[in-house]
Amino acid sequence: MKAKLGMSPIAWWNDDLPELSDDVSLEECLRQSRSAGFTGMEKGRRFPEDPAVMLPILKAADVTLCGGWFSGTLVDEELAANKERIAPMIELFKAVNAPCIVYGEVGRSIQGRREIPLARKPRLGDDEMTAYARKVTAFGEWCAEQGMPLSYHHHMAAVVETEPELDAFMAASGPGIPLLLDAGHLAFAGGDVLRAIDRHHARITHVHVKDIRRAVVDGLDRTKQSFLDAVALGAFTVPGDGSLDFGAIVQRFADYGYEGWFVVEAEQDPKANPPLRMAQVGHKELMRVMTAAGYAVEKQGFPNG
Image (tube, rainbow, N blue to C red; front, side, top):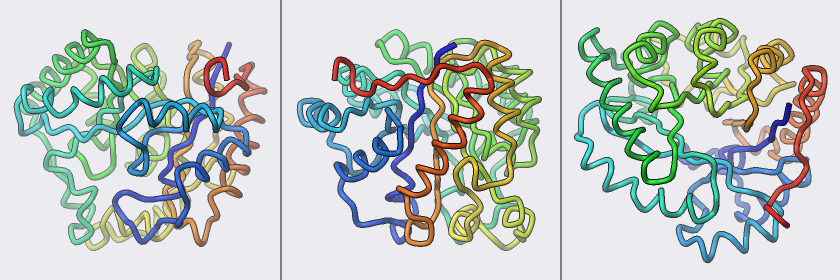
């Protein structure tokens, strides 16, 4: 079985908390992650929007674009508005041969609102969840028809956060909207990562191997502290530096024959946790567990680079 290892630039520059950012260029971010062994990078705010500009940068770093976040609003807004906003991203991602766009629901979400505690996250009733899931499925089908598949990202502080919410969304949606399984977000929400893989493996097309620091997560007062408070306190880290058993998690993916990207999202303070060092820790741990699970990790970055 083959797998690819990527990173998110959120380890270097945080889009929601600019103060948790290192003053490094895109080129230096790519250089550091590639030197640690990663062959892919998801899109961040310092990436150019023109493929003619982006491709030479990726090629020079020997890195491929392995995904990127789209802020969806389908829980409140119509398909047309989201189609219009995502259309340029689809064309960009097709031009640089990215595998998918990550759909993150920001409608009603409090993930970027530091003043709102976790306990006040939005919740959908059964009928609302069904209608929402069907709308997202239609959107996913449309994006795939344009040549770029989506992968749905369940997320802390959003309408699909908990394991029961994920199960309900998956039951009401269809194969037209694949799933991004994020180990850290699901564990933070109190979910069972292995059980989620068991239930939804057939639709998982992208994986975020985000780890958590259990002591930080368990120590939160969710009636007072927000998602961004948790990030600033160090709730997240890389595999090998946190509390999750990625040996078991990666083995479960291997058991179901998953082949694709495993992307590290080390959303934390780069000054307290230098991104290059954390990238090295995460890569070493992932290579250990992926080798044990029988994966052959691809070493090539940019195609024909």
